[in-house]
Amino acid sequence: MGKTNVTELLGDKASYYLDHQCRTIDRSQLQLPSQDVIDRVWRDSNRSNQTLRNLQQVFGTGRLANTGYVSILPVDQGIEHSAGASFSPNPAYFDPDKIIELAIEGGCNAVASTYGVLAQMSRKYAHRIPMIVKINHNELLTYPNKADQILFGTIRDAWNMGAAGVGATIYFGSPESGRQIVEISKAFAEAHELGMCTILWCYLRNPSFKVEGVDYHAAADLTGQANHLGVTIQADIIKQKLPTNNGGYQALNMGSSSYGKLNPKMYNQLSSEHPIDLCRYQVANCYMGRVGLINSGGESKGASDLQEAVTTAVINKRAGGMGLISGRKAFQKPMKEGVDLLHAIQDVYLDPGVTVA
Picture 1 (cartoon, one colour):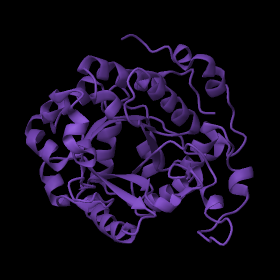
Picture 2 (picture 1 turned 90 degrees about the horizontal axis):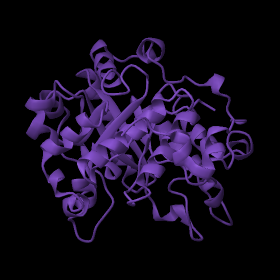
Picture 3 (picture 1 turned 45 degrees about the horizontal axis):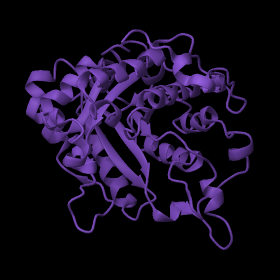
C-alpha cells in the first residue's frame, strides 16, 4: 500500500479532526515527541544509562525510527481474551514466530507479548526488534471469570531473554488495584535497575463506573487520573484507551454518592467535548507529555478497521500523544492486510500535514 491519504480516509469528518485547534491546554505547554526526546526530556530523570539506551532502541526502530513517535504491536490477547477467540480469525498467529514477523514486516518500533511468546523466539529476534514482555495478565479460565491481573513471571526472566522493556496492566478502581499498584511499582523499579524501560496499561475496571446506562471506563477525567497514577510509579510510556466521553467524577458524585475529587475547570477549561481535547487532557496527566501517551487501537470490527485506526492515530497525534499500540485490528486478518493497516497508522505520524492542534 502506498502513502495513506489521511484526508480521504477521514471522509466528511476530515475538517473536524484536521482543522481543530485546542483552546483548552495550549500545545506550547506540552513536551512533544521529537527525534531528541531522550536528550531533551529524559536526560534529567533518574533513569539509568541502560534504560535510556533501551528506550532509544524502541524510538530508533521501525518506520517511525527517530521521529519521537512509536507504533507497537501488542499480542497478549491469547491470555487476556483467550487464544481461540483471538486467533480463530487467522490461526497463523497461534505461532509466536508469525506474531513477531508481523511486527517486523509492519515496521513497528517494538512487539509486546507474553513471556511464552517472546521466550520461544527470543534468540531469533531479540537483536532485530525491541521486545516488551507483558508480565501480568487477566486469565479467562477461572470460573466464574474475574477481573484481576496476576504476575506470570519475573523481571529477571524478561531481562535474560534480551527484552528492551516490560509492560504491565493495572485495573485502577478495582478492589485489587491496591495490590496491583504495589506489585507493579516493585516490578518497574527492578526493571529500571536492570536497564529495561517500562510501559503501563492504565485501565479502569469497576462496575460502578457505569452510571444510569452510561459507561465511564474511558472517560477523560477518570482515565486521566489513571495516567497520573501510572507516571507516578515511573512508567516510561503510558498506554490508555482513547476517551469516549467525560464527566466520570461528576456522575459518581450525584445524589448521595461521593467519589474522588474534582474541580469544574477540569470540564469547562481543561477539556471540551472534542475528541482531541479529551485526549489532550490524558496527555496533560502524563506530566504534560514528558511521559509519552500511546492510545490503544481497540477491537477489530472488520471493514471499518482502517478508518478507525487512522482516526485514532490522528486524534492521538494532534492531541500531543506519542503513538498507537494496535493489535487485534492488525493480526485478526491476513498478514498483508495487517501490515498495510500498521503502515497506515504510521503514515499519520510521518505526515507533516497532520500537526499538533
